[in-house]
Amino acid sequence: MFIPSKAFADIARGDLEATAFMAAFYLWVHKQDDLIDRDKPVPVEHSVGFDLSIFHTFAKNEFFHKNAD
Image (cartoon, rainbow, N blue to C red):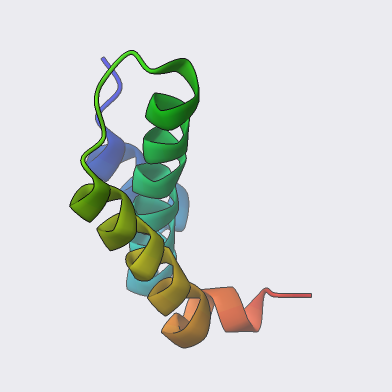
């Protein structure tokens, strides 16, 4: 069974910033999927929250900045 937190920790190999980046991106992508296929309702406040979280991740996450190029 796929458990995101375990998979991200394994993929990141101990890099907590990489784990945090993957978790934020994973949540944002799921929100986008739900908005597109409408299989689950996405309250506006949740949508905005995920968007702000991913913006914050892009702005502050050290893993993202080290690997941006």
